Length: 331
Ligand SMILES: CC(=O)SCCNC(=O)CCNC(=O)[C@H](O)C(C)(C)COP(=O)(O)OP(=O)(O)OC[C@H]1O[C@@H](n2cnc3c(N)ncnc32)[C@H](O)[C@@H]1OP(=O)(O)O
Image (tube, rainbow, N blue to C red; front, top):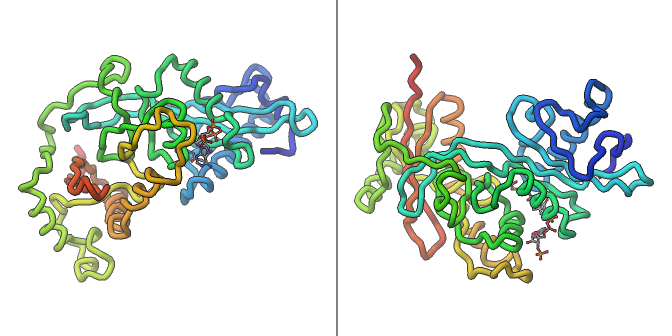
């Protein structure tokens, strides 16, 4: 990725670590002109990453980086472009407080380091740059990839994790984050703690076989905005829905990785085949609509959504989860 300014002047190291300050080394400190160029680079990378992942808007930008406590690792190739250098890609990580389900389906609160965004320029992909960046970050954080959580990893990223780190067996979650087998073994490193069984503003109930039928019934008569687009309920703003059954996330890649025949970090594994096929199969249009409406509802109506994931038809690769919505209590 080329820019109309000298990349080597902005970033002295092959890999720079950027944070809220947008300062990359001593050179750019106290130099608003250089910091403006750094902001341009980050914005451009964020846009390219969003495009590559078919996201509607970038999740990485200079302004976002300035307000969030994330870290961005930026890789350059200093020799290209007549010695001015090119930007190869970036990796963004940050700590997130997550409610996760362990292997036994027990709720656990964790604050792991999460991979939030990752991008290598299209023409440079599959040349080992992603691995170089990722390994640098692991060393910098002194962490193993199994102890991290992954925010809606794309099929390419899942293939990357399977190939380089043998991460293939995920533990199903209800949110968009993916964690792999082994995550829950090192409690200290993953900063885990059990969630108290009862929340002050509502009980989190596991979804049982008995409840599944009830949820299906509730789904049939969902109030706005959860009702299907052409249902009469859509025009009626009604009471809060107590619970509903929804599928996995419609955006980016699926939050659950189906165990594959472990490639043993198989270097010939095709990311297009069973893994991504099953991922696609999971995203039915009705699930997408429902989750999108959930997200909208949650964002605009100031609610807090809590869900529990349970496979309802393991053979099909489809999954459902029970979602309870609670109005947020304001003091
Ligand atoms: C939580 C998140 O950030 S999800 C978003 C992840 N980002 C994206 O999907 C954006 C587009 N993709 C990319 O930018 C890159 O492909 C990355 C960042 C995923 C990987 O970086 P790369 O430099 O390509 O990875 P690297 O060369 O080290 O490793 C190659 C492996 O990654 C995976 N991979 C990389 N590119 C592709 C691709 N186009 N198609 C399928 N798999 C791919 C494969 O496992 C590949 O191994 P293979 O070539 O033997 O099949």
